[in-house]
Image (cartoon, rainbow, N blue to C red):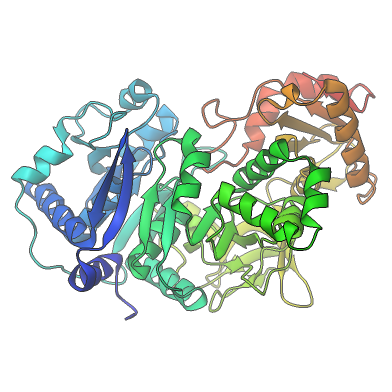
Length: 551
């Protein structure tokens, strides 16, 4: 692969060499739609021609919204052919964020994909912004429809390869505070990250991907949209989130990417069908253990996966150990951020240390500052924040290293451990600092917990707020849940300094979701939102001495 081969170059290559082979597989209602490499090139060229005929010029921004679909890929490739800059919008973005991103990015056109809360989303879209609708049932009403536009459009000829410093995408960080920031990712950034990743994890036979994490996020955009183009890999799309358990086994991808929430739910799903003691007994029996494991992996849809990665937030050590012990699966925890094109550190097969985020990747320019902050300097690091020169300056050191905002340590073998977010560390009334992330990861050993957040600013001792998995109280009594939560809290506290110890577990009533604003679209808990929403509860429970409380 030449260093400056873009995903569009790869599309042209596969279109020439295997034009009739399927790239994109899209379920829609009761039917399955497919696009070959040649069909993607044809449709993308037509849409590129249509966008240019609307008066757009090279470098103009085009927004793409909705759930992951084949048409998101088609739109992105159309932008590539036309020299336009793609701007992704999460399907569950707040109306304020939608309006901000569309205006801040100077988007000239908005592609509308399938989504929930259509009225809320469309109410946030500027009235004068042209819209093109994808052909799916849950798509908001648009001024023009995809099929009509490409039917009338003249395709663009040829392909003008961009310069290394040309903008490829504006990726808006979901952010836990304030307005989203537009990360400027250049073609040089994108190609560097892809080329380095392919050296580490080259193609192994026919590859198959499953696209379900938000395409507006840098990870899914690079690891699935981008890498599938470089690998010539087939991509299947998730139609509805509640169909994940049904669709994943049918696809059985060769590379699977998830966030901790997904793996926690996989584990809980297995244990609901087969209690832990039975699983431990059966998997310990020679031959039978292998049969049981294979059946569970087939049910999950992970039986063909050669790489199973977790990112976005810390994956509890207990979850990794459970998958390794009972299913013989290595969950590979990686680390990265939009600002460095998700090229930072990763555990790899046969080089996986549980609890770490792996070793720094080749040419990542990793180092720790004197204060222990993780820094990077490589060709995948962003050009800066769009229209935010001051924030851009603040994010880089004087010698050009990207500040991650994460604190870390490196062990004797070179594995990196995240010890917490610089801004998440809080001080209790005792004047002692507490880093919540490792403590949260430790209590996540309890498989009934869905999400959790340690709070303690202004308290004499930290509290752990937890939301339980949906429906868990149907399977266990409250008395049993309390007993297990307290037991796990005691185990965690044994390894903590006295000022860090969890004083109490507080079980909240409502789940924490993207819809109610407590989680970002990338499934990170908004700590500041938790502290604000539960301020009265935190104050009341911080003043009492029981070990557990229910909202």
